Length: 220
Length: 307
Ligand SMILES: Nc1ncnc2c1ncn2[C@@H]1O[C@H](COP(=O)(O)OP(=O)(O)O)[C@@H](O)[C@H]1O
Ligand SMILES: [Mg+2]
Image (cartoon, chains in turn green, cyan):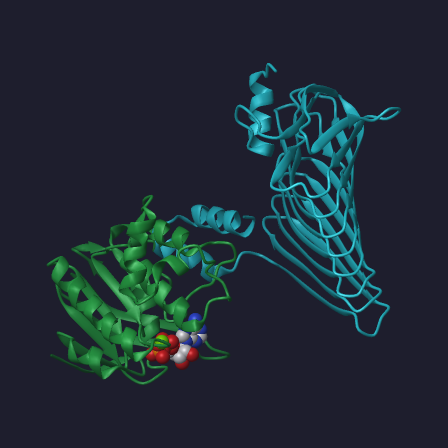
């Protein structure tokens, strides 16, 4: 269970400060799939970064399974079971897909085991396993590898930031199945997806609309 | 051939040698040849007058390898060694060189290897060279390799040159001359730390139609180390040349990249890329979200970069 309490985040903007997240409170109960949607620039990615520890809030608290994690580093939060698939995947020179999946899994996965995660996101695993995670891959390929990597973490709480971007329709259906299965696999695992896609909104237990840094609407 | 533990360690680091070596080889340890084997197609002969060897690879040799590692374990040794490779037409050969210096004393140890390659028509060479230093002494470990490559028509040469650890001072010079249709691929990896200095200088001349060179140097300078990279390609015919200098700086590391292109033929097409910077913040953040600490993340990023 993740509880966000009165969370705010502001940045220095020229002269005045700019508040991007404004006093948000939100709970993500165990076993639930929450979808956050809303207009571009509404603060969705920023909220995900605050949960993962990439940004530090100006005020407010983040409680994960009863523990206040507001002061914890990215690494510590990852170890406690928070995983985050970025909206914009990161490229690495020389690091191969297999390396990244192994790092994510935190152990020496066999090639066959690593391939399972690539297949889940609709990639022909053998073709990709030893590719470098660099600019030679297309945006859609990088995005799927990003998702596969996060799936390999088998985390308690997984954040997906616009997973549908750059993914074709066929793979997208598979992706929906992956999300569904992930929920069934472990009862108390929860998922937070940032998305504009109707089909993802349709499988949500709860939809949260974030606009200008505040929750505009919330419901099942 | 009896090897002590330091010799074994160095050979493993520089040439992946663990036990028996297949094919032709010469192992040089503290200025002496301690093991040599020629084969039907690869003949290794000592030079007279200077230290070093002539290595003859017969035309049409296929799928063979030559290992010529050098190890130094005595502090204060300084040597210059000349090795010439004569690679016959149509031969296909892998050459594994490399030098490991273990210096536990307080005198400088230095190995200057001058390697010349005469690559015959349509021959293919894969050359792998690893440089490595170890030992706790205050004496420096110094390596100044000179590599000259003369390529006949249609030949191919792929060179992988790596210096990852423990070499205090290095000045590398690589010269290549390519005739028509020859292709040179260079992959250099340099990592410096502490107070180390590394200079690497390339001069590649593309002299024949269709000659092609691709020289990529990746470096990481940590602590107070310094690297200077001089990459020059000269196009004297309808040819293609590409150089890339890609470097990461950390701590107080400093890197100077001096790329140069010279086109003396209107159909020469030469491209150069260079980038120096610290590790991208989003790369570290990504790996931290996978549970790595900041320093573990840096290590992974650098290992990948220098792979
Ligand atoms: N570190 C930052 N510095 C300045 N502005 C930022 C920063 N992070 C986000 N923003 C701004 O905050 C707003 C919300 O961004 P974001 O969370 O990416 O929105 P969304 O994901 O909903 O499209 C945008 O106007 C963006 O430009
Ligand atoms: Mg966003």
